[in-house]
Image (cartoon, rainbow, N blue to C red; front, side, top):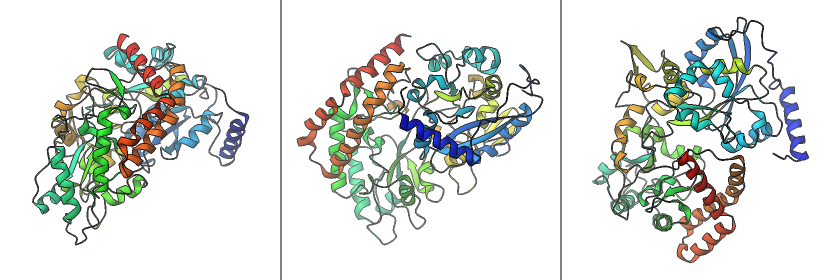
Length: 529
């Protein structure tokens, strides 16, 4: 990938600053003489690997206290120097690293480097193909049991630059509609089942002081952060688990939904709710911290309806008990829909681990990563270690409830890498995991049953060619901006019918038809493999 002299200069200055602050510099030496190709420890004398990962928002590095990770260092003699970034601030630092900055030995997490990042910088990453065969028996055995693991991370040039993960016991449904049941009770309302009933509930939330604090103006039926929550489009048959804006239409063809008629109708309904004062006017301008301040207001809950993985994932510990997941809302076409994947939401992913070419001991790094591909390792890196998150009894692993007042979802993320990092749980091992149906992921499994009949097929995790990936990146910059800005305008200001054709033409000029063609071509190729 071509880089300007200016970008190189910025990268050099940034790398120097990191070094001067004692944060940079690869400390790895040549492969130690006491390196062991099999068995543990990996080396007889301790060595250090620098491992970079990312976390959502302000989660921090508490996961590094996971006892399994601590014990792994003792068992392998591989000390980890963790480098942890918030995904909120990661974009700028990622640009520096990919422009010639100081790379770590290992990169973890599927949100850290994307397909485009990898495909346009393949010289920065080791090919795992031989490493898997020679040094990763756990992963090799997993790929033999589940061949799709190898398929999903084999790039079009035949090489494997990143490792996959199979997440344990994944729900088939992503976010589901959640409503404040206490608000409904206070106002004498029933759980809404259709869009028309939901609309009447929104009006009641707006007018009836449902939180009972005497202020009729501090509640909103719906809110959001930084834009329209895509889940609000679900009743109109629009689901997008992949984040590509692609969905199957009634003819079983992949279409770009922001130019479809049902999207237009969804925006009209949302504009109506906005004008009527049911939608938080700060939805397009506030950040997640501001939104969570309203969701978890200490005085009284302020948001009545939302879409969430589980109620406590959005509303924290104090008010979570007032919220319940309800059945999917029936839309204007008389059908209900749910975003998800019949095979399990993101149960199989790639880009969970990479070894950079700055790592002079890729064999050691590969052997260290291979330790993650067991059932016990995977569940402890999904929920938390056996000392914290589980009760182990009679060969079974019972997932504990979080401490009183804590969100189960936040607790999992605090204790582990959760959805990030390499994992593999065999089908046989699933039978040993016992989830609490009243809490966290166990509750999610139960709640998902309400929506499983309505789950749509997501755009698959196809593998693009380097040229396709780079072109998607180029086209998406303008297209995403047009979609986001126009959505905000349509919802807040209306004028949708008059401005619709102009909006669609702007997207066509930005190359949306070429983008659709790339997505369809890649999907056809993936289906034929």
